[in-house]
Image (cartoon, rainbow, N blue to C red; front, side):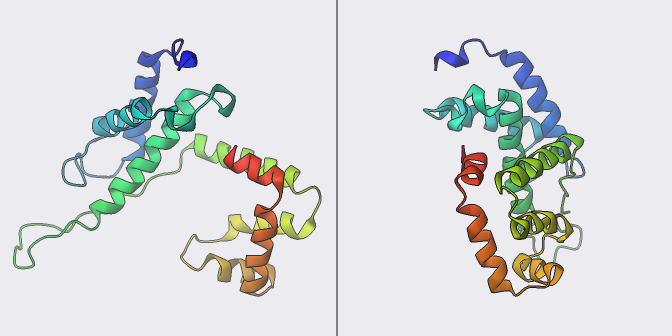
Length: 180
């Protein structure tokens, strides 16, 4: 816990507050039965402080603001998905079905994705099939049948895609990059 002493918690709070407002843009002011952007910030900080290891954060993983912002975005995503499952009485004509909120991609998320992609390219050490797999991920729609989409894009079978993904994930450099 010694490396938490010099953290500027006021700055962290302000950064998370902006990230929370951005993450829930387009959603109702309160969602998932009463959660707001402020609640997301509090929930994120509480999870960090309650965790014995700070949710696995260490300074070599990047700034605390960036780390906690990604935790906050995951929490927002979870709450917004739950919001879509909130029920209502079918005979109540005045109540509306919950509006789905789309979490918009920010410039920072785009930069993070580009940075990760470049690191993955260097981690595969010139294996052209794996480089093609990484490149093809940008062309998918993100639907539930990603292996099928990748197979169509790359002209391979879904089984070959699964094997390529296994090969990619078995590389020590890739595992270290993704899981630390």
